[in-house]
Length: 148
Image (cartoon, rainbow, N blue to C red; front, side):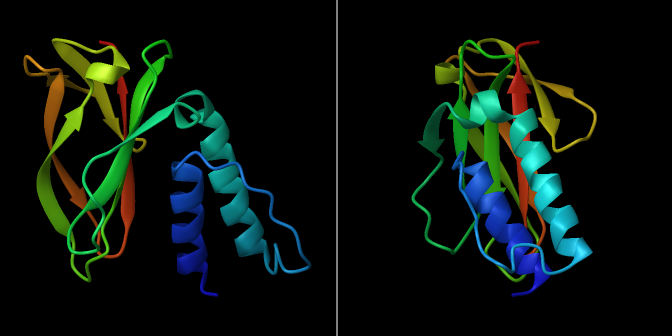
């Protein structure tokens, strides 16, 4: 298994809020693998409250365009966390609509793509955020939404 494939697998599993238990003699077949697992476990722990909350699918996944889902928690510090995946062999930029009503957000929200600086995004009357997102070829990204 390639390290990039393992990275995508961990992003998918942990980004879906799955608490898995991996066993076996080849869990950490190199220091790079151990560092990758440590990175994703730390990421999961940092976002655990929202990742263990309700999950909304953005659209039916078909492998033809950006696929993803949004975890929502109206009582948490992180109100929503969107995980986006690009199955295509080219980078894809698309304006997506994130339903944040179930996250308890209205008017505006603070949005942070991965570890970049947060920005304020306006929500429409149905508490939906329209955001232009770029996901690298065969890659993934996440967005955290908080109350402003």
